[in-house]
Image 1 (cartoon, one colour):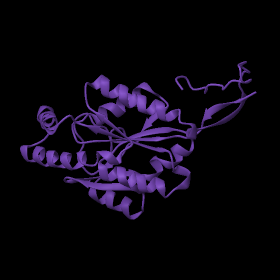
Image 2 (cartoon, helix red, strand yellow):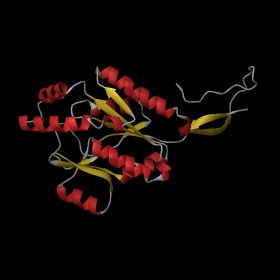
Image 3 (tube, helix red, strand yellow):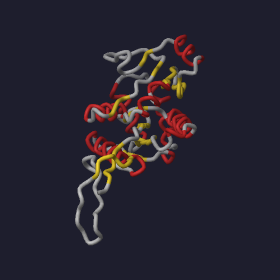
Image 4 (cartoon, helix red, strand yellow):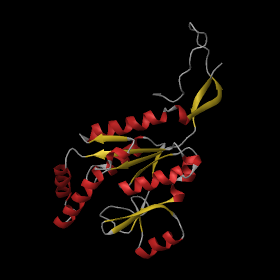
Length: 230
């Protein structure tokens, strides 16, 4: 009788990349397709855009509210991005991971580094972080996407393009890199990364249930994991 592997480690999937690479669309599709994955709602001091909802897309904070939360040490990480500040609250992450919930969040390259450090400093969280960089095929693609969405002034587009160049230079610091193709291709690759990471032996433990005995040349054969696809 061989005990079956059972998942017990929640993991945090970080999606990072330049503006206009579809990070938000990818994370929303992953959450929508897999109810066991939850999105981390981050904080920002920028104003909400049309159809964005407080507590769903972001927690929209005033500069004073942001400063007060910062003084109370509520943030795991925060960063100044252009004219606004963004942050992630600690209570949005660690308790949920400890209960085995998988999480996904979009951050910039500085935020990704802050997550790496925070998880490295917490022994119970080590091995639960997976980072994915979404790479545009070229800078012209970023420029064209910013023009198409019509949300930025020429000055903002120039600034975001320069930031994108810096971010692209950091791609080798990540666990995975997806060079963007079609939306379906990008999603299939991201979903494949999540599925493979969930099958890592380091994320599994023996369950109390014993698997069926399989006959083979060596006696009992290895029993496959209980999670479909592994």
